[in-house]
Image (cartoon, rainbow, N blue to C red):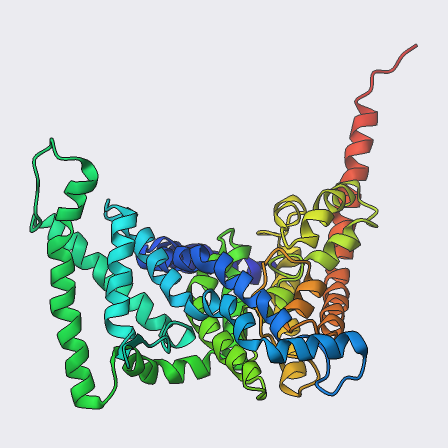
Length: 440
């Protein structure tokens, strides 16, 4: 067993860690991740508005308070939807600016100017004018992949032209803001002269504009991202990287965010239309069923540590329980430790994968309400699970079952590790006593 573990650690350190490190520091991956983080507050607030628009009561409820809320929502639906439409409904606007602004820093470009260039570029291809009005069809989840591609393209064009000195330069005496405005004139022209004709050409050949064509290409990937194999692969990669001391969640979420947002947008549209919620694997599922207390679902382990006979583990439990309630578990990961600890390798990998399987089938069998809202990742798991599913109660039960499952899987490994520590504590105490000077 020890030889197998050593071999596995060797593979992680020599093969997986270098690749993961390169991916995690790759400028496009980090820029996409930063873009979604920048847009997150707007999307969370927008999702929160869904609670007021679609209250968690049965449509035929006769309870006075529920009936009044439902009727108010029906009468004022358009007004209530406005904050949602201008936040979650235009997520790609925020995402495109965020991605370009982050990528600009890699090229020493001005983030504000670059973000505005990306916004113009995205609107150019994704907001056709219909009856004198801009179409918002691709401002939500359907335009996410277009926003990513166009933001990267416009920023790289700007960076290339600046590197080649193909810009308008004004004398140093000119104010910086004015000089920057003239510097970006040629990049703006280059983007317009490439993207707009390309959009018109694709529309003429296929009858689809760029975002529609991109969605038709990635649609199989979006559908595949909502399957159990995709879910288990994402969890496995995250856990293995974390066990090696690499922040695997940042890498996995950076890759999965576009798919999660596309699937969440579909779920929200289905709820607004009164249809069945179709998708399972979105960010709320990841945060509140698989990362209960943080990566590895360690909140139940933190509770177990509080009752440990080993002083070290009990101390870590006291330090780590409160942060773990808000899904911050570094005190547990590095204090116990779990990272690179052979005793905890199997449960750390398997606990979230087993919970993922349990939760996936529970939602697939319609035993538990599906996610329709984006929630802060620091929300305590049972509350966050209910909030994400529009305050349904069934996610709370599932979350608690996942916690019980996690505790049962961690317990035997914790006992084995506790035994080792108790033996070491007894040995240290004995050595301390033997080192005491003998007095006459």
